[in-house]
Image (cartoon, rainbow, N blue to C red; front, side, top):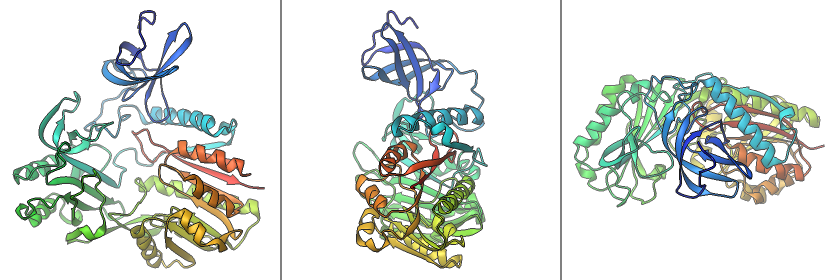
Length: 485
């Protein structure tokens, strides 16, 4: 493009922009040559090597956020995709080796910038690839909507949609009519017939503009250990008497046969666009309400409400690295038979793996989700593991209510939500005085922020690695070992 005639202002259409790289978070990155130096463009949904038209939606002094208008020329790296493209897998057309290359370089650069750790590349150890590149997910959430987004063009029309929300917004849904390549091929291959069945009931899908309708979400969990699927159909109570629940169950039976583990029906009359609801608003229609997954020889029973790693095959590699870091931290401190703490423990996966370590005498697991803690307790019983105490509590409040652990913790494992750890909770964690902290994050940018705080408190980053739990997406998991002298 002719940079001498370009006007960099909000709303401007920039033609023939060459995407050069990927920024952390997945946006395509381009640079415009100006008399004041390079001006950076971040273009959503674009890939390195593409030539695109883009519209500036937010302008800053040194960079602009852009909306992709059109791909004029594809990247030479793009490959044919044997699956239906979906909004949640923007990099599916890039070979996995290229995806990993871009994720690694952009994450390390971001981490150095936000944490202030200049030597991050020297501390960086390895990139853990996902054992499964396709069909690796164990949970999917599909949305219903009256607003259909046309696949490829993004044009919107009234209709009956069941699939994924268009990337970057919350109202229009792209119909899923074939295998996406990320979840279960047999089930997603039947999505068209499921949508047609729901449409034939004459009950409306959710209308996002009016906050009304009947069908809202279809949430599915999969057990790789037992090759079975658990469903949660979320609807409103409006005209519920007109819906034949058992006929819907029979539909799923016809598709999956013995692979159907159970079907749950949940009522959600709230305006908020969230599938997850309290357990008391759910009814088991068929089968069982939990499934079992196996991680590194241990069984974990998982309910619809519980958090569990999305990619169980890669999670085994991730957890093995976590245990390795814990052992390294304990060796550094010279601690044996210590107390370990697993904060934000979910269903207790890491806690149980730690309890299997002969050098750890006791494990404390804490998570704010009560259902997850109940699952954690049952999982420990199932696996015959002693020496663990689980608490359903906010982490910060727990550390305030149980001051007796201060100075008694050998190592702490942190695996917080994407938002990271709130400052007051992180300060409480620091005050425990653990010699080592193993920090697992599904959002390295918040981990980098927290790393700066830990370093100010006297901790040093000793080891760092990345785990690709989410092929074809912009997401990456990171593991860091911090030690204090």
